[in-house]
Length: 109
Image (cartoon, rainbow, N blue to C red; front, top):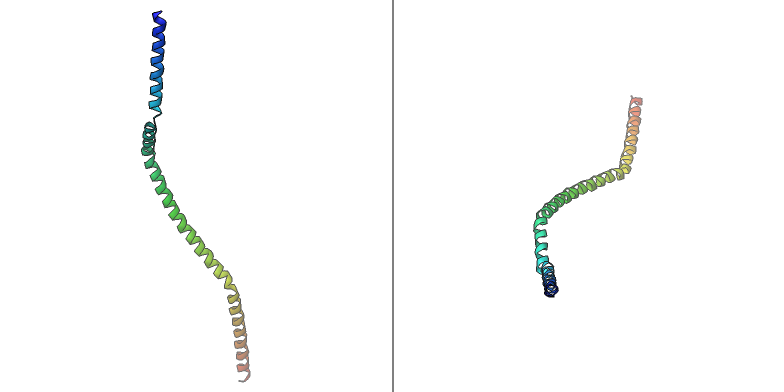
């Protein structure tokens, strides 16, 4: 009779002990400690990754600026084709007038 009573008491003690260990293991301060450990381990890698991303962003911004500047220059060249055609027409007209004047000057001699 004494043995089953002892087993019951032993079971109660182990149940209480197991519950206490479970509560301690899931204590918020333990969770915060584990979170702190995780942050401390991962922060250096995250900082390196952030620095690499910032360098990549700076390089990208430089490339975007260069591409937009080049696009603007090409657009200005395309837009100036009207003026080049006008200058070409004026040059042809000037050459024609010069040839006409040369021909007239030779005719008077």
